[in-house]
Length: 586
Ligand SMILES: *[C@@H]1O[C@H](CO)[C@@H](O)[C@H](O)[C@H]1NC(C)=O
Ligand SMILES: *[C@@H]1O[C@H](CO)[C@@H](O)[C@H](O)[C@H]1NC(C)=O
Ligand SMILES: *[C@@H]1O[C@H](CO)[C@@H](O)[C@H](O)[C@H]1NC(C)=O
Ligand SMILES: *[C@@H]1O[C@H](CO)[C@@H](O)[C@H](O)[C@H]1NC(C)=O
Ligand SMILES: *[C@@H]1O[C@H](CO)[C@@H](O)[C@H](O)[C@H]1NC(C)=O
Ligand SMILES: *[C@@H]1O[C@H](CO)[C@@H](O)[C@H](O)[C@H]1NC(C)=O
Ligand SMILES: *[C@@H]1O[C@H](CO)[C@@H](O)[C@H](O)[C@H]1NC(C)=O
Ligand SMILES: *[C@@H]1O[C@H](CO)[C@@H](O)[C@H](O)[C@H]1NC(C)=O
Ligand SMILES: *[C@@H]1O[C@H](CO)[C@@H](O)[C@H](O)[C@H]1NC(C)=O
Ligand SMILES: *[C@@H]1O[C@H](CO)[C@@H](O)[C@H](O)[C@H]1NC(C)=O
Ligand SMILES: [Cu+2]
Image (cartoon, rainbow, N blue to C red; front, top):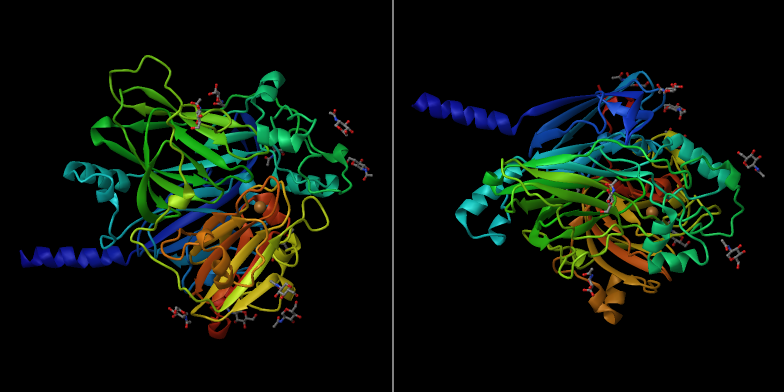
């Protein structure tokens, strides 16, 4: 008996400290997605990449073997990288690019729990399919919020089981041209290439082409406001002369087919989610790996309890539909309590520039069957299809357990998003972060490797405010992603942030801020603007010395320079291990 107890103790300890190895073999190969062949970055032969499933506290060794004919890097989105800033995967910031036919070893600790994802962080390669889910099971000491959903013991046990068996749902958009073609065409034509060709659920979907009269009929009043006398293209997208922030000289004859026009339907597979109604609930980690489109998600006739955002628990909120900004993760519990059968899962564009959708199926495993089409909560343009559809209101995100930021900050940076001399070039601050800087000496190794107007420097253990000012109209919501530790989204508003600090702004517009229990996230969108300027206030604690990127997660905006380097803890700068200074990490 004593011996048995000893063994259990020994193995629990061992499990807590385990090291998980993962090998990612990257290849560049023709692959059919949405029914169309194109070259795709495959991870271990797969698109999307395989899941990395961990326990909180695990040490991760993630080896990348690059068999693609170009440089790559991999970033672990939302992973804090406490003490391992050289494993953050940003070329020119935390490492040199991993060259063709070479390998790189990332090492990090899974300090947090919940849903994350890994993805390419070199040039536009995320849009070539290099991404896959990460799930980190919480340690037993983390308090779960499920008692706020139901006080029933069996319900709570069912929710715990659903969480343990949670499934990632990688939601994305898809292009028929490669990321390098997108970038070269943006330069040649002077366009912001904001149209996609399909939406995908776990890599599955189709290219559908709607008749032009239906497209015109579906065009929303907001779209008409931007379009003027023009109409949407045959991809139901804004034409290339609209929303380009002009006047910039364009050469539209340089556009490739399918970037704005030229829809040809093709049929790909459809994703099916299998549910066992005896389990009462399923858990899904809705993860947006999209490049340009905000995604609206809904399951016909079903409720969803959102219980975690960007990997961290919140006070659960019951909804029928939600918008998932690029880079965000929403973990939901779905009660599977309807008549067994097939229910349509809907993924719809929530971005103003394009009408686009795809569908999947929620299938209950049961002999009995629903013999009618399921009833939608949402329409093809992402609006309510019923009088009582409940949409998620992001202002309802309350961290669980509640945590609050400091009320004082050491520094405030006002960072302006605007075009920078071309339709496809952008600023986040005073200047534009040129794509070529990905090839520079990593900033982590040399703090003066890039121009100083692309850098902010802060001491360790201080609090910092980042005010993101969008200064022109007709702007999408820019999903601002901060690498390393999460930030608090403490305020937002319309117009220009005319104050020098949040404290000053709070004297005139206190209702625009929440310092009590604000959302705690790694990617937060700026408010979208049709007619004027908007702003977003983020507050974070500098606690992990290293060089980390702050950037818009719309890939074409990031490639266009909407990025800034945060040098955290310059007074406690880390010594770089030799095996990282010399590149491969092995
Ligand atoms: C994909 O197929 C095309 C047409 O057969 C070929 O020209 C191209 O080299 C292939 N690309 C890759 C990456 O295999
Ligand atoms: C690939 O990365 C290497 C190492 O940093 C760099 O020297 C080279 O210029 C890069 N190649 C391209 C095409 O970016
Ligand atoms: C829209 O109006 C502009 C200016 O009034 C004109 O130049 C253009 O040709 C019109 N476009 C269409 C599609 O009618
Ligand atoms: C516009 O693009 C086309 C196609 O790439 C090219 O042949 C042409 O020279 C370009 N025109 C100008 C003025 O750059
Ligand atoms: C988009 O939604 C419409 C209307 O619900 C549906 O008929 C169509 O099949 C959907 N498209 C795809 C690709 O699933
Ligand atoms: C959508 O919601 C609005 C506002 O609640 C309501 O007026 C409208 O009737 C709803 N649409 C449908 C199709 O029920
Ligand atoms: C750091 O980068 C700057 C700018 O490229 C360069 O002048 C300097 O030599 C670099 N320092 C080291 C130690 O490599
Ligand atoms: C931008 O320029 C202003 C005015 O010169 C300066 O105060 C601010 O620090 C600069 N911001 C960055 C991020 O360099
Ligand atoms: C940086 O500050 C954080 C928060 O106070 C602290 O936990 C960490 O140990 C500090 N790092 C260094 C290297 O001093
Ligand atoms: C790393 O590179 C430096 C300079 O090239 C060299 O002195 C050192 O021995 C290398 N370290 C390893 C572990 O290869
Ligand atoms: Cu953006």
